[in-house]
Length: 181
Image (cartoon, rainbow, N blue to C red):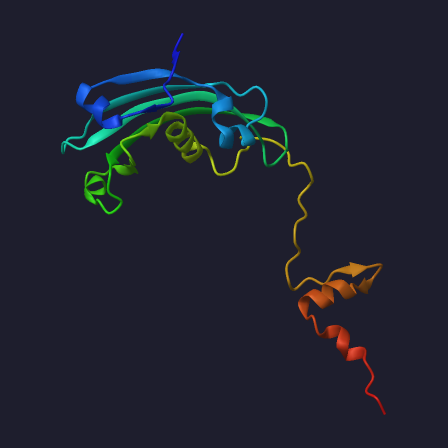
């Protein structure tokens, strides 16, 4: 069983000590994720290794794992997203520091030498989620209506549909107006 992670840490001290933190972050401690997730979502298993990059930059390497239950945007039924997100970020105290990008790392700004673990983990989870939660195969809640090609007239009982004509030319309805005499 994994332990709960601390609320905040000094990441630079943990890098110097070469520490690795492993534990779980309960869903109720991740408010932005909890707002998206459905009941049945697991707590997130997290491993954070505080180390140095090849260039000597302090960094965090790790993994976040868990199953997140979201609403499918096609059929509106629950879909389980199996999250297995590796993470690798460089720690920096300066926003304009460009060296992490030169090593192919994303920068994580540390203010006051404190890293709030829940915020860090939640941000990484939200970045790892798909843009649209959906099943591989499912039927949409409503059937999709195919659009007819622009050159085919829409008819209703053999007569041209006025609404379709108006869509083609919004000023078409004005041709029936009379000029004042």
